Image (cartoon, rainbow, N blue to C red; front, side, top):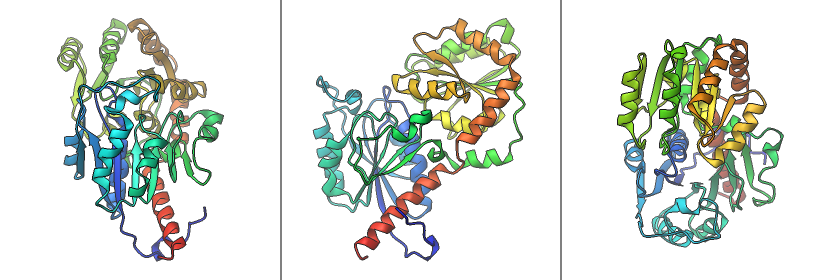
Length: 385
């Protein structure tokens, strides 16, 4: 599709976009957060954005509203039980897909929806096709490549080496536009701003940043802190980010109190500032992967969900990070050993930093927004508008 003409010469197209995404204790917060980044970018360009979210325990509905977006809330059903044989993440939806589609239809049917943007592992082409009368274009944000989609545009910001371009073969309509890889990562603008200001990293570890996701239901953060309490590491400054849905913030506060030079941070609008001043990160393998790669922050990674492992193995095998392992196999001792490796491999950390920045673009959200506008404009031309 060649729609790269003079954007400034195009007539303005007023658009209304709806996001269907959730956060919960089980899902985590990353899907909502990356959708908010794209919504902020679109809003700055004059697009009206809405969210459709289910009222799960641990949702981020209030946060989305505080960011200035209208949220259409789907009710929780505590008695619902997923049937066997469905999608791998069907339980994350909180209802069967037909009910979710009917409830979403009630939101969409009496309004203009130019784009419906779906970021949900529990939804596939069945749900998307059921709602097709109520939107003009569909965009899907995915990481898994494990189900079919009926979309015009698909974004997967993950990296799988040579497999990256081929992961959605046979899963999309033939004319669907694919945006694949970290050059399309949905990063807030402060990451690009800080990246342009930061000097190259020197590979010395003086300050460590710990973040194990917005939920961390198995409390991997405590495991990391216990490893960092070893006397060999007692001189290192540590910043710990505790997510909104963490199960034991008071326990983490007690661990931090017992270790000098340790600061707990909560309720941060962005991790960019802490990433910029850290020398090393110990992190889960979620969407913060692309944020820290953008800032060239070397990382020791723990996979806290099955869907994180493949990407993190691919990144580690190419030298973009160091993969400690899946959380069930990671111990305080293995974290300690990896920290000792980091302290004695300054050159390797410098290489990580440089290669990571070469992989991730500074302006992924702007690139994605441009494709949405281009497809909209091309469609308007083909329809004679």
